Image 1: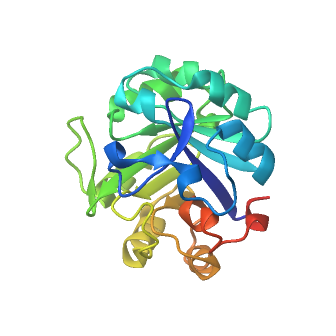
Image 2: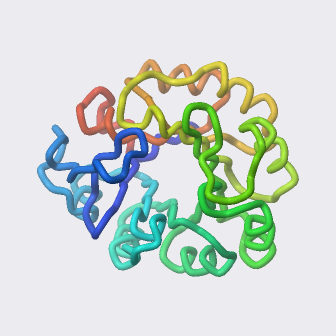
Length: 232
């Protein structure tokens, strides 16, 4: 089954519109959206009725508080993948108390954290994010691998899914890096979810055809390039 997952970037309890990972420029999503006039995360989910969401807790990722009460409430209405700036195995355990799945991002966690988190928790509820900026891994750790080397390294870890996010294309509808994704799919033992630059339904079909198992979408939903039905 191909999964189309609505992204909710949550900062200070409201959903913001993400563009190219430049977090200081994010604005309330209601300033941009053509499908909802609110930036309240729970209200957006109640109105759009997605089957699942990718909730990025930008406060936790930046180390300035959290949005856990909001995300706990979201999980009452749909399946939730939580990105919460994991820095330790305990962060994963805490996240799994409020969400169905926690994804560990390479921005703040290294491979030791990933391995320990899988040992302490149900690894079927753990994903890993490889966040890319200009085709390089975005990280505050000592990870010095190329994207494909990191994908191959993670083949030895019992995670559920591998999420590739091209931050340089997020919010731009700039199209997808097909060559990179084909290489990722061919060398990964884990199913791939992708986000960044997705424009319309034809991009969804292209991703499905090359073997990607799911896609993260936000901008193309809010400007109606992709219809709401695909989320349900």
